[in-house]
Amino acid sequence: MNTVKKPTLIIMAAGMGSRFGGLKQLTPVGPSGQMIIDYSIHDAIQAGFGKIVFVIKRSIEADFKEAIGNRTAEKIPVEYVYQELDKLPEGYTVPEGRVKPWGTGHAVLCCRGVVKEPFMVINADDFYGPKCFRLLAEFLSRPQDGEKLHIAMAAYILENTLTENGYVSRGIATVDADGKLAGLVERTRIEIRENGAAYSEDDGKTWTLLPPGCPVSMNCWAFPEGALDKFEDKFRRFLDDGTKNPLKAEFYLPFAVDAMVEAGEADVTVLHTDDKWYGMTYAEDKQMVIDAIRKMTQEGLYPQK
Image 1: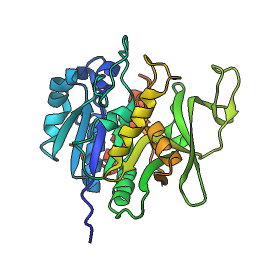
Image 2 (image 1 turned 90 degrees about the vertical axis):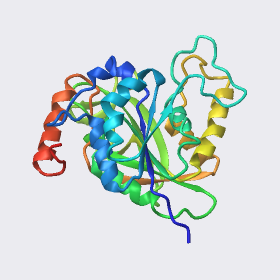
Image 3 (image 1 turned 90 degrees about the horizontal axis):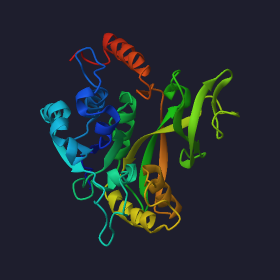
């Protein structure tokens, strides 16, 4: 009988330094100075993950280990993967003038060779809540059957992911009758309007209401063992695509998944969570996150330390 290996959690943190102006400014949000990332690691350990892999840039390695990595390693095995511009498949070089990273799909691909077990992927600076870790760990513990890769995506209720302080970008999911992902459309400007959540495609001149309670992707995915081999093939196709902008185009994780589904190599099960997502898209969001975590700590969902 096949025993399923303990899953690994990949945390994409390569963009941390640039977004926060250096890791020293990583914002404490918990009662004992915890950062958002600490809650994800706690939830992953509780859900039965066996290892954490941090995807970072080499330039932030020392700061990252001091701020986050070293104390995480006291609780769970930790490995580091470096997302750098020149980490490309054989035969490819960085286009002249390119400084922008290659995107979230590339961040995950960089883990090839290090991650050999089923894995879950999250962003470093998003608070996901414990339920998605339990759902995806459970999904990854099931033996895979058939030829297709079985992938899962945690879907949040749109209203649970919005901020009152501005607009956000979200992947709006369509789910078929079998609970599989049928479509994912990126809406880059979603706001809370008078009648509910709506998106605009013309800088706020006109708005289209979104259905209440619609499922959205927050870049929280689960992949079976062996999925990383498919990532390389998709990334090569992305690099070969002559229509894209070689200096700015990014290989996003949903693109990689979509390409696998299109090729008939994978299907995606949508797992719904009613947990509230928190992030700090805007400086004004910080207090809301602090208050929410304080409340969860008082209710016993998280320890003080």
